[in-house]
Length: 497
Image 1 (cartoon, rainbow, N blue to C red):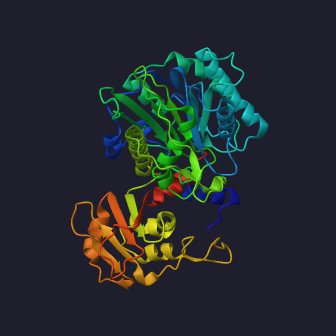
Image 2 (cartoon, one colour):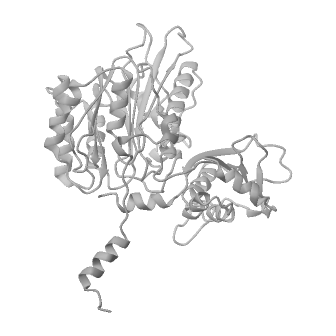
């Protein structure tokens, strides 16, 4: 038999390794995700949303990929950004704008999908600035020395924006602005990349000092991969028609982010572009009502070092009520990202309790959530709880090592005090896997039944000592993640194509 030529061999090899992934045809939303997409909403007064098609990514021939969220009047704004050292151009430009304007006098944000404008040098920063000034020109703010529009981008890293396409589309997005549900939904859809559904939530709330006034808060987010705390490719925009003092915007946003966007992980990768922007235009605030002014940051040890700063305790009913409304909204937005994790089949809640401090509990939760072995076991419906214990055992602050030395003395973690359980979503009795360091005889059939469900909860107690009577004095960290499937590899193996 004649041997195949090298060319034929290469073609056959290429075909055997061919993989493909595409978002649902015509951006149709998978049936299982339809329940997460709202059909109506109540949106904050004085804010408008719009979108337009630019064709940023060559493969996108018709779907909107530029979005605008605009306040009808200048308002306070703030944002929190990725801690990745390779910060994208829109991140550095937006940070500069917030500092220069001291969080005051903003009109909104312009977003493009299809290209992250990350690691793009001077040209990238100039393009991000051009997006901001193009949006300003549409809102009549072009005469300002410092632009009034924040910038976000998402998509492939290391490629320059087709800036003319985007700046030509921005006026079209402005012309399409509106205040109804469909306008907001169109904008939420325009910022998606590998997302399978747009993520949009709106709520109403009241403040105790004047309960007759109804305020609104709305948020949209995008993200399905490259999701991990600090920030977690995640973009989010939150708007409210309540009045917040400009100097308090950062405090309240950071407080809400700690237990929401900084408590999720899909794959352990912190993006270069993560941004959560927050706007408060006071459009629903009655005359004479003062803006909410949250206490400034203070130092727990008396030294004003940035790393020691914490939010000052606050018991003002209005402050507590608004923070609760903001946190609830951001938490539900963050959960939607995990539910749409690339290729994910399970939504996993991890609860870790500790007597030591909340950071010990959170480090253990993060370690479990980012373990590829834990995540693949959950995908396979395998109650391989040993992988959970392994992940706890190498968590920073629990395990010291020469490679990653601890900054302080070890916390005295005792593996013999650790208990692990699966909590079924049907409300039935927990399935104990490990009790105070001793393995339980696990009913594998019941474990598999629990793991068949879409939602799963893992409970870990790091200090489950016999003399304990309850958990009242324990700290609990709650973290959300998803499983790893074959599809995750397919999506990310073919992402640029």
